[in-house]
Length: 365
Image 1 (cartoon, helix red, strand yellow):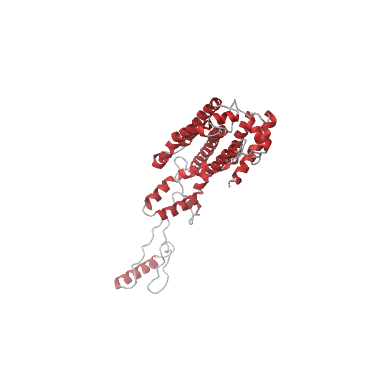
Image 2 (cartoon, rainbow, N blue to C red):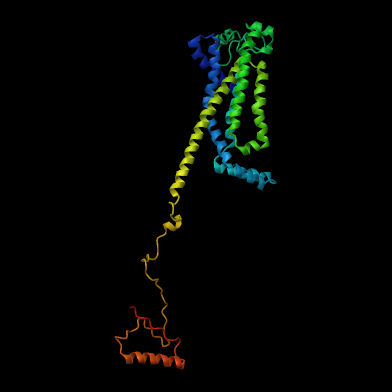
């Protein structure tokens, strides 16, 4: 039914056993233990980029967390509208919440596949007939796995099978406990450290969320205790898988988080340099970009020059244009000046004309 999972898992395990079996011997228990560990490392290396994408998505979600809080408050009574706005916001920021679950979702079938493949290494099938193959493993590899021991313990057996079954397999409960207890303790410790490292990266707003707080307690205490309690029910090879997986996760978190912290620090420094470059110098009046781009429409005035006032041109009562420049007294005679003044006075007294005569400008000395 799940052969699409069992065959790839068994193939990777087979490849690594060919490598370490060539170096250490096909029946060597350390060769089989290293094959299981490098099966984990191979799968986690394949999932490295999805893990980095998961971390980046979590960082971006932390950045627009206030906007999410506003949407929840705004559409508290309309769940459908709230979900639509959430999807729109996530699309604008390029965040996919399902992408963060991909590494975990992929590891679950791998764990199931490894558990099933290890159980199928038994010397007999379910109907009692001798086993001749195990997916990619042939009869010789199956017998090699059953002959191998790791400090006297069998990788495909577990403690709760009982003394009789373990003796038939070539081991004992004491031998199994000697190997199982250190692996069990290491699995619980590494699970707790990995969870603590993840919780430490959360923001204060996330930590105050009740659902997040519950998940943090589960990861920090319940999961490690579950690994310790469930160890007697699992084959030793599965415990090796669990310890190797947590070791890889811990090292990967350190490398990826350090790399992303350096990138974000460089971005903040670059943003600070850009703000400083755009900031005005000390004592300088800030200039807006839109006003700076506009060209002046009037020529700049010289220092000390008087402002220029422009008067609208008015026409006289008879339609003739008024004189713009009065004649100087030196050029015109007294009689001309008097006649002009006299005419304008008579027009003013008689009510003729539309306006009083303009004041003669003074001479500049």
